[in-house]
Image 1 (cartoon, rainbow, N blue to C red):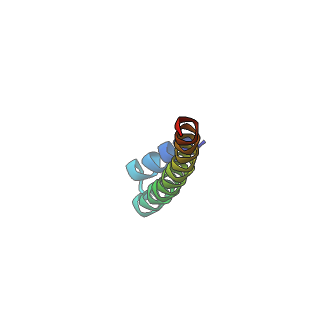
Image 2: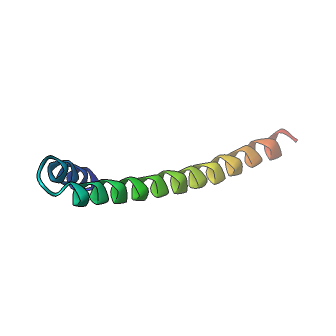
Length: 59
């Protein structure tokens, strides 16, 4: 869905609605960056839990 909105933003850039296109692309980029950093936190917590289980099995 975000790719479709991003492509719509590009179409706006190519038309007479440059400001709206920049706003759409910027909004989608900020949303995707937020999702990226959130997923990094989730995976880091999972990896830390797995590492803790491995350490407990070793000792």
